[in-house]
Length: 330
Image 1 (spheres, rainbow, N blue to C red):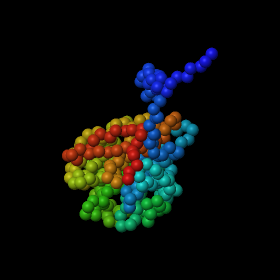
Image 2 (image 1 turned 45 degrees about the vertical axis):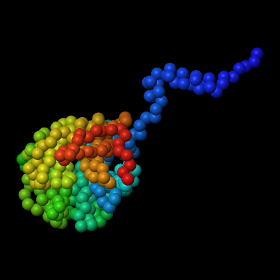
Image 3 (image 1 turned 45 degrees about the horizontal axis):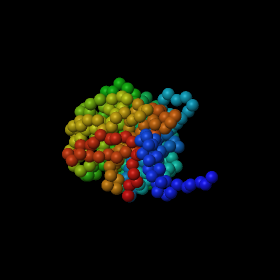
Image 4 (image 1 turned 90 degrees about the vertical axis):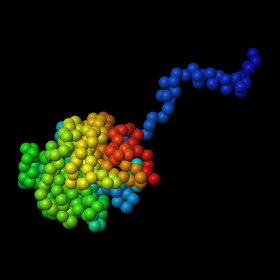
């Protein structure tokens, strides 16, 4: 029996007919899955991000959630440091700061921020005080953004007995520092109450009284202050589980006008802690969630990055949290 081979034209017609008969869902399933850009660090648990832009590089400082077999609290002993030139590829640096660097501290390497002034880098960090009950804020210093950092004072900058209105022992946490255009440095911090104070030029001493911001609805913790144009922005963790909300002011000392929610509860995490920067013409919202399967959660958090956009009037658009994360900045 003679075999008749189909012509090239008939094969093309058959292929076209077959493609039309394939259900749309089957075609969609064949498409590649999106690249999982978030979380950006997957080999360690990272939390409470704070970013610093310095000489074309972004330095990312994070808390480090430990991961014992059974964990129902925050176990954190040191901080981590990463750097990037494009917000996508991150280089890890040896841990530049451990809670033991503060001889007066007991434990708990909680949220922190690093700022640069006069060629030195100052690291403000919340820890558990060793002799004064409650959380405290220390300051470490280095000549390099990647450390090593050493205690700049030999004692705490803020202790729990300096803020007595809040009847909790952990209201002195989550420091954020900004230096205004006139060279005046400000420290914001707090839990349930948002405190602020001026810093002396040496960055290691208060320069005046401790004040409060009273116009932030449902303030929980995690203040972050940044400036864009003629506006100052004070974002913070709102309610619990935590969303991020924000307020705006023409002055870093207020009054602050509440503007609303900036992002929703971050997946699988009761806490939410943000850092906001501009880099190479794009604004970024850096935060953490608990999305690493299957061990993530409120005590095993991971840093993520998504785009931040502003409206024409200076208000911020609500952040869209994504799996893909951001594209490389150029």
